[in-house]
Length: 239
Image 1 (cartoon, rainbow, N blue to C red):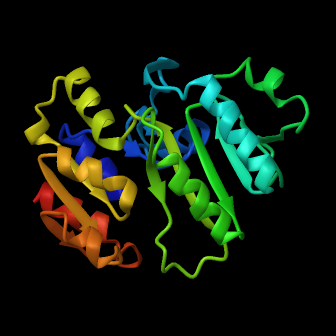
Image 2: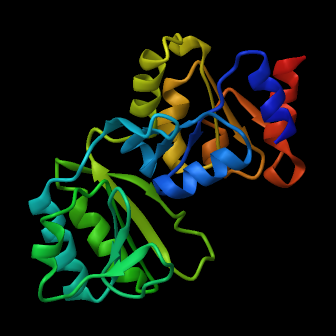
């Protein structure tokens, strides 16, 4: 937090860019006194919390949303649908911001909402991968994030969004919006959803605990998150 505040005092903007939802990102950004602008839902939305203004967003076609929900209920796998204010789930509400969909009246409920991102997540590994393969053939959608296949986490998951949605595209938009040349941007990350951002930014940085595949795609590798790798890298920029 101290390093982030110091580097912003010399005119550098620090923007959080995450697969998580708007409220989560704003809270973390305020805590570490980063920019009032956040990129959320893997680039599906850019939001200015100071102006309370959406700068950019992209949504999944509502007919496709209904199809994804149908698949989730038919296969009894958990689907999380991110809107502006809440997350709809097909089963297992896990936090106060989530609302359980009725499996007989979800079309009516979802007709009132714009869905930014959908995340399939379940212990049923085979069904998750079957769904992923089916979605890979839908031209209006693409996979913006997924768990590594060799991860030991008990659930497998992947997220899908409008084909225009990526952290890289969000960075391009924000670069133009803030009038900062793209060559003067730096992307720091650790996972698959950061790759588009790495390709777009003027300089790309991965933490040491990222996978070898991710580290092969960046210009610079800093120490791990447990070793304050991001802070150490930012401190070098100041110096």
